[in-house]
Length: 447
Image (cartoon, rainbow, N blue to C red):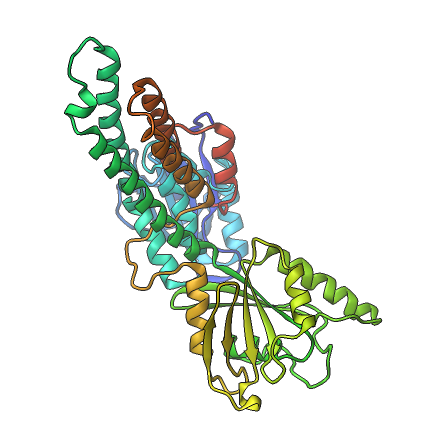
């Protein structure tokens, strides 16, 4: 991806009406543009109350102008921010004025892309900007902010430091093979390698937790008709989202709701009851149910606590894809006269609860967090994306393979080099142009 320094402009606030709207401009030498817009040169990093003027000198709006000269700005270029009244017509007039003065409309994520290319942010920090904007919970927002401040990048840099030091020892062995003493043994390379493997595994574990905060857990409620799936959705959501009746087949289509448990986002999907039916609409709903099950992280298979797990329920379990976790939920314990309970067996985990009364719901919430792999009280997580997890997994694999090559330094060195490449890709020290384009294209315009 080549660096471009032509001026770009965009509305940086959300579409619609608001008290304040912001137009942001970035590029080289924006002083002439500022002079034309404002009628004067604003001082660096000082708020200037002024009128924004059109080509004839008439006022478009009045507001605040902020000028950030390069390199002390978000993008590393000159940045001009115009804060006016947040009406869509006014914002468009102001944006068109900036475009008329030589700027072009910014592409999605182009401001942050320029910050990356100008070494104001590394790639992991740049991605955390979008993660902070899109955070679904307060925990996710705090996690994204830590990554934006560079904590994730610092952890990766520490792994790289350890790895490079170990590579230096290996290279010394290869460069001076005539030495009688093996430098790897002399420098406690085995201990260094063990510490490196442990550190990479630790970073991967924290990243998995952070990825959960970013993506959430996809939970599908499934089972035969009239076992209480809609009631359970309503209980989890804390409101009446789905219609609940005693008539089997009431739910014909999927009902979705985003909730959170202890700061962890969950996407809950209530589905049509699974049964043989001649009703064409219900059959379409059942087909969608199986489609949702195929995409789930975990399936809650609801059964009536009074009947327990039937042959029909076991037949449904057989159709659930092997990679999808499943939990049996014995609902309606209020009618069965039993108490809330968690039963763990080698092949399945069962929970006994009542969606109607709420008895046992805390057990379900705790079990969902356990299935997700969530650890309570974690405050040093990394807001990781799938590409970060993939890179860390590969780095861990290469580092582990290196441990079996102590007697062959050239292979040991090669595995360490491959591990270093994976870690470098996280912060963007080595990143392909198409990867950068894919990452920044998902940002909003104006950021």
